[in-house]
Image (tube, rainbow, N blue to C red; front, side):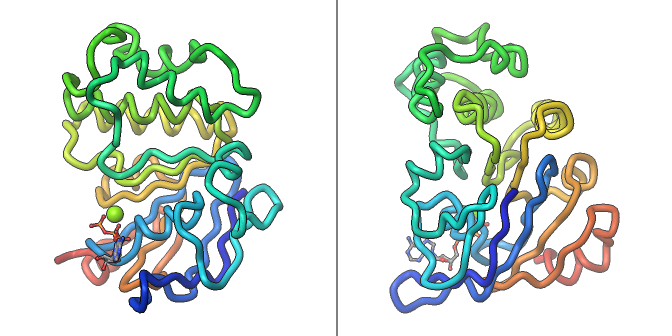
Length: 231
Ligand SMILES: Nc1ncnc2c1ncn2[C@@H]1O[C@H](COP(=O)(O)OP(=O)(O)OP(=O)(O)O)[C@@H](O)[C@H]1O
Ligand SMILES: [Mg+2]
């Protein structure tokens, strides 16, 4: 579904991504891991088109999108849940969800009912301001807003960062359901090894802008974690 080949990217003169290649098969959950500052968010921003690589290809559903602007990629079926959630604190939950309608391929008018089935809290709290929700509820809102566009590829940047365990489990179950039942494809940045082992299919580890390890999640051993992820 997503195939990244030999991506290079620099902020000014500082090279951040070096020949990064990565594959996300249709219907799978692929987890991108790595210590702080190794380039995970930068890679996600290149995939969705918020940054442009100086070299390499990004093939999404068979098309090289490396030169497409972000809005074209979103229309084409990508959605991003950014790091830090980035919901609108002064808009209500319902208004935040309606923002996601702009990304819908046909430009539909209503938030799909399934978003509320997946995250019932978004229905219960519809008239609350986004900023009044707990961190976990805001994350569910950010995911719900991305799902409003009915994407084929969902990109999530550290969705469990700073969230209580019961909501982490709920989010993991939703992601698993979307890939197994809805044929969605998911790439998520994640640090939490237990979450990756429970809900992920494959993993990639980055270090200083390079992919240094990858495999199926059952192969994610303590030795690999110690080598590449412990601080
Ligand atoms: N807009 C920017 N301009 C210049 N340098 C940047 C910019 N954004 C990030 N960087 C630098 O690029 C490198 C990679 O940053 P990035 O945010 O991709 O890392 P990350 O792996 O997502 O880290 P974290 O785990 O903290 O989210 C870091 O050295 C960072 O300081
Ligand atoms: Mg990041």
